[in-house]
Figure 1 (cartoon, helix red, strand yellow):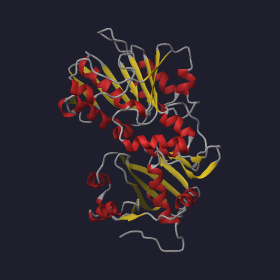
Figure 2: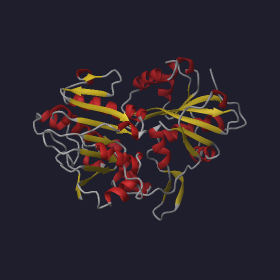
Figure 3: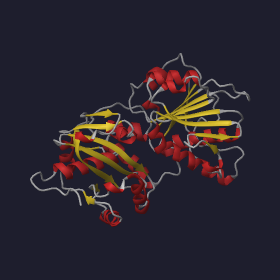
Length: 419
């Protein structure tokens, strides 16, 4: 197996301006290996770089079938499809210039075919053949998913180029099958491991760079995973009182619904809808928004698309550090209320959240990712501190602030409910 440090992508025939725009780090652009395994930290541009490679193949090679998947289709629509449109724009195109089906999941260019899909049912790809496949966030897949996918990357290649799989993920668990059964398994030959970090991405905003640098002082495990791209282990986790459910609850199971909102720009703005049971001991949670580079006006427009007008009076608990943004959202017609904060509100809110039974919709990819990694800080001697690692916590802050404000804080006082 070959292991390389990431290098920047460049297109051989692109003009200099396009080279600069496409100058993200990626070590497999010229690889002929069948299995290209992109292990890396956050902000290292793994996804952007692989998308650039596959879009170039889609536009320049002949008679190729390309498969881009996530474990679930909703998570793919939220994350990968917008990236596809962005990379097309880097090539001077937009998705409307390509032949596509009405579902916008199948695209055609000359005799090439590109399909976006969910891999929640691996049986869907049987009787299909592909030249290239990319399972984004490959840690969502299990070993059987990989074995099935590997079997069907077998379409004829008329130009003699090898068929390939591209994997991208954060190495959160050293016992994950990607390491134990694939990378460490000598029976799979033709492998190339590409390791990248945020330092390989010259376009990362300084605010985000500072967050990765601070991780070394907050939690060495997070620092290994998200800053260095090294294998970590699941430890010091805060929440265990949750499971995953396929659908929203039936109306008879819950009494009311609220929302939590965490503001961002370079970091994502995050919106979660929370259904509260009749006895207020059980909640169902649904990720509704997780997107970066949104101005407050952009955020309001997205909220209007997401939230039915009949629910605009439902409480939306927002970060109190942004009173102007909350007021602008209120002026747009939403019942946006500042979360209650005090000196111990984070710890108290976490303690309160631990008393609830939490069900998270399976399609809430970022919510699942955050809660499975949310952990306590440790000091230099490895002792646990009573505060969470301040990283990958946007939906964690939104859900905690909403529920602590609505149900937990000042239990003896009447709560603001609906207007």
